Length: 97
Image (tube, rainbow, N blue to C red; front, top):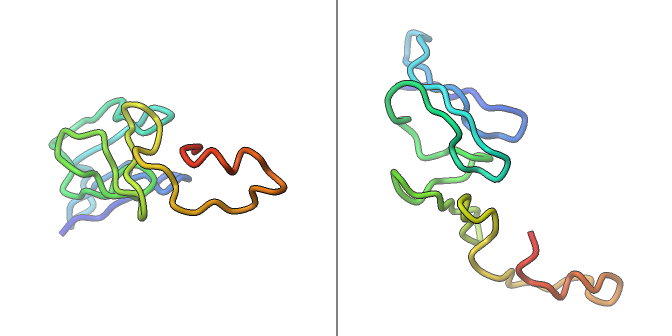
């Protein structure tokens, strides 16, 4: 059993074992790439902003409806909904984050 401690964005920062001993400490760059990691690989795939990482060494996260690349700092697919295009022309840019 593991316990997760999150930061203000919901990103997993600490992974502790059942007795409360710190096993992994994670830090992230601004767009989600792992900056540093102390300890063994985390026992969870819920990492940056609480989204699921797609692979052990991958910088891609599943963010609900779209995939997000921490390497590029952008979503990999365009947003399927275009809302408020009349008032905000930037809404027509479906790849905007």
